[in-house]
Length: 174
Image (cartoon, rainbow, N blue to C red; front, side, top):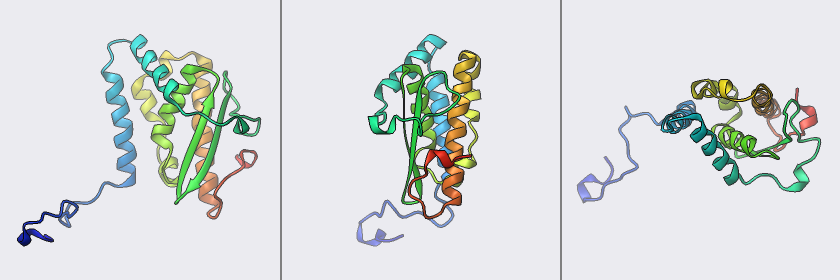
């Protein structure tokens, strides 16, 4: 234990048998935090209000990214996603013209942004089932949510396959 005899405690030091959290456990931890937050609310009106509040706090996208190339097909509302790679991690920026959808985007970005392509690909949106969002969203909103997750996973696969790319043009996504 570095420094223990000198009276200085190295708080960063950990015994070899304590493994740091893996990246997947971090993403699992994030999804569990979201599930726990939603469990705090008594009814779905409170959950909707929470989702809308998250949407209000979402930074969104600059207008030059709100174009047809970045628009997510299959959404009832207008939704735009932009992705870039920084230090091996994918950063997502997104926006919508509907506040409830902005809140759903905020949830997705909390889980999937600043992750590696493999982390994203390995994390299906099962936490939405735990939140029971599918049964409380309209059919078209649930389809839009699926379309957004599909776009996120398509970006992750494209970045995984294009190791040197810092950005991926949406037209190239499968």
